[in-house]
Image (cartoon, rainbow, N blue to C red; front, top):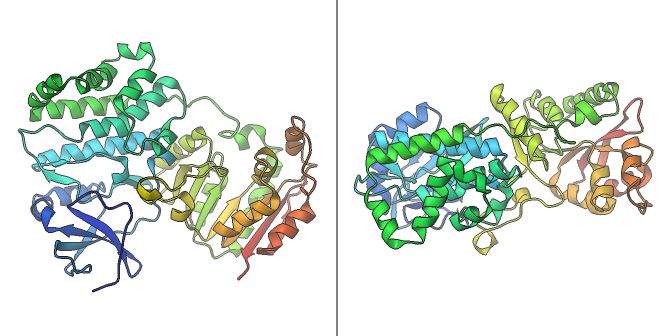
Length: 458
């Protein structure tokens, strides 16, 4: 028997589970799911979804690697570069994941199958686009039965989108608390009165809320659910989700950082030259860009064929960058929402069902440009603690030190007492040199700022 480790998030479905062996990720298909799996493969559904790049491809491994009596076959899916979760996605990413789920559902019905669940955890962003990754989510369609995943779809996709649309507030991160989706009674209390004028809200929120409190009404609603009505519901949901207006046309401090609040265009040009030189001297193939703002340097890293994970705490930064990545078919940038001072923790059953951000995201290089002063002065994270943090995540580090003489730091210190006695270049280098070798150190001409390329000590 091959030595393997079962994935901690894969424990709910008797159809099979995900496991890791010899550095590869596999999916076991159990006897319980044998008929449905064969239908998926033989009906033409798998082939069609694959040709449309909507389902992760796999190869069958005819080996019982777990030595399980439940085993039917083993799948080796195409390796995902990054695992992200819906509470790290911007509005448009959740929107596209929802539309993909509905498209996969509609395609499944054409082949006599249906999705038995509709969670955003079935979707990952891979090579610049959302893709469905759960090969065991397909079930044989029974025209006598409703779509059992309808409520889950609403709770996980539609309700968060409605909340952000109507409340004009970043709401996705609430999904880390409601890991199974936002309950209908919760959203019914939060939505403003004007939302009741929307037919979609009335049908999918308030009517569902009413039927959920009435067993008789719920049973009547279920019994009347035909295939035609299901297709109508899919069409209606698709129309709602595809036509949400863009609420993020306004600017924020961070989403237009390099356009509006930067020291000068010369600063950006000089910084660009230095970072390019660092990239040319680096062998890194992947980079985590912390505080990416509008993605200027994420695009620069991507131009060197690096796989880029671009993060920012500002939803609008990530929204804007995601739309640009999508428009230009950039397949090596993944924008994600991340508050560096409060990154996504491990959540779910036994705190293992969904891994913490830094347990999932491992890159050759970490970039922290125009960021240190915000963490030290804005978040009260001391330089020694910050150096420890970067040591834990960065084999190689490109980092910018912005001293107190800088006008941006001076602005920050106007609103608070200066208690940062060791916030200077010499202490910065001393603390970081504990963990890193400073390979390159270049002042940005015309400023007090300094860029460093460092490598973690062995």
